[in-house]
Image (cartoon, rainbow, N blue to C red; front, side, top):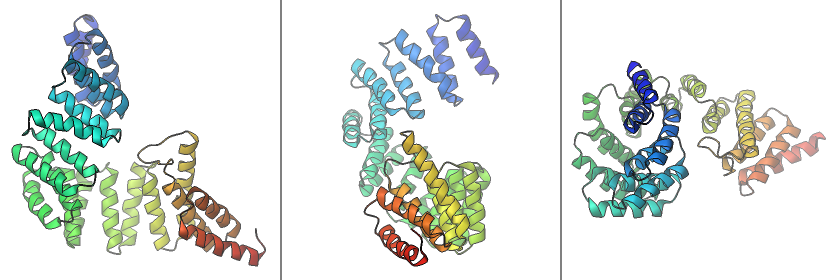
Length: 361
């Protein structure tokens, strides 16, 4: 907006005034323009390398840009300047968790909690690490304590509710979420969590209403459409489920798992050509990702499991379409990608036999 333009102009007119550039970088971060903020922070840390706050802020921008290795280096710089700085310890723990180094994240957080045992941010961060390690009850204890220590926080009760659902305690989650919903009726994530708790409690009509409200509040969030679609599918409303899935797909066309779900719904409806098209799309996505050496949240080609499953389901759809030679090709690829895929081995044997009987390959 206008304020951002004025900050930019001030930074340009007085390039030697570090505080102007810092204020502009912070404004860009608040505005969500992280790609513009990052190089300014990079220049600032080079200009004033002895300021740990600059390194910490730069690290958080890099984390938001999904560059955990570079972020970790920034937090290391900050800790080298002040090994007891709580913001640097928390940032380093976040970066380590994003890198998959959970024991290292625990080490940073233990140091933070030794200094400030009642810090809500440190307790919640340790809770997230425990959750990632599969220690859900301990994670719940830590986040619940953090929430009690920060009574005005909304994010911590929501996190607590998610953990309650992970621990299969929907009634406790509902007790937490319903008063929050009344206090914050415009929070789409709150309505979505409430819908999940209601669905787990078997209150499907109320869950559908909560998910629909989440969609109405944030229509461009694909995950809300996806949760509504799953509920429709669970309750046998396949047409409504397909509409919601297609809306989610339009918002996240490169989400391989979402494409797999749409294919599964077409399987359930015995619409084999449509199912095959979806699985073929996933195979193409995965193949491109493998060729380019990518491994992102939605395209986990390095794992092979989703790629193999897509080939398997495509092969089964082709078998049902009586396109036997093509089915054999896809099923062979499924087995190659995941030799432990028993169903793919069985289908390949069955389809190969059909191919021999029909005179195919």
